[in-house]
Image (cartoon, rainbow, N blue to C red; front, top):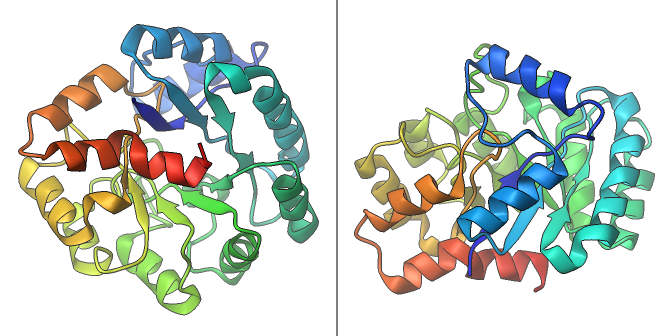
Length: 266
């Protein structure tokens, strides 16, 4: 079984423009067209059984619209193995009500993107949202480390994430990109002793084997989630990179599906 815990899609009407803008901004060639149908096709081609969509609200006015669409996705694609988290923005004022609505409608978590949303991970408003999500049993996935489309400032460095964790002691936080994209030495220094999940999206090809294995050794396979950041990376290459590492079958199973199954309750 293979679960991709970090994917993105856009509504059909806006996907072409959004993909063009983001691809140019990050100087990347996408692997899908960014639509839900494109994700489904890639899952079938690459042997992905379940995918988790992580929608990003770049403006607080988008939160409710994104979440109502996400609910439709969850109803329409449940049998095809696609689940969507909800979106949240630090400047969305009625976050407690919206988070409660997400929990009541069966969502398993939310996505925050500190760089896109221009709030540091240890800002009071960000911590309040994470704490409220935690109280409802919702997971919070955060973009972590450098975003190649928005290289400076970095709003979720490993050191800043560690400050948030030390204050809140959350049990339901997932840091994307193996804890902090292209800041993996700092991940090892600040985060591998924390109660956090890391998804491994968009890491291979940049992270060294030594860095990844050190994170695995110090953080354990029980806290790592297979992920791609589709459409910006793909499951085939990510899985092949994992297979080249000296991992046990138990570690592979943890990363590829067992940890995700527990989070998604499947």
